[in-house]
Amino acid sequence: MADPLDTILTLAGVQDAVLAHYDVAAWSVGALASFEQMGLLRRCSDAGHVVCDQCSERHTAPVDEQKLPDGSLRHFIVCPEAGRIELGADQLRQ
Image (cartoon, rainbow, N blue to C red; front, side):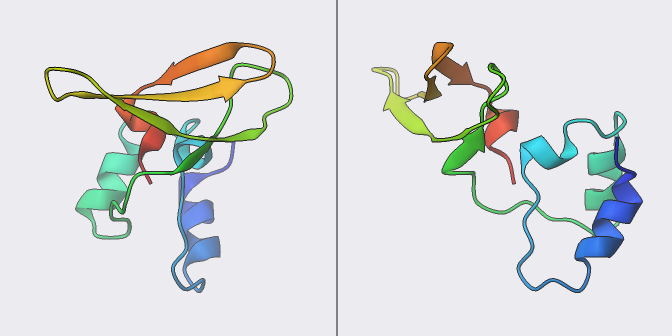
């Protein structure tokens, strides 16, 4: 597991650097929120592609958005091994 502070310091000089859910999923509980509160990270637009965590390939797949009759949104990717996978909102966060 990468140290969250090391990750942030490594990217500090990179213009428009983006961390995806995949990059921060192994961080300790509360680390992401702490860095956001300190102003070191901020949320940007949701991901249009995500890394599949349901198969051994760890491929990148485009996010498919489905609007339900009640107006809510559901998000999915398609994996060659696991099929259609529903994503949680946290998996789209960047």
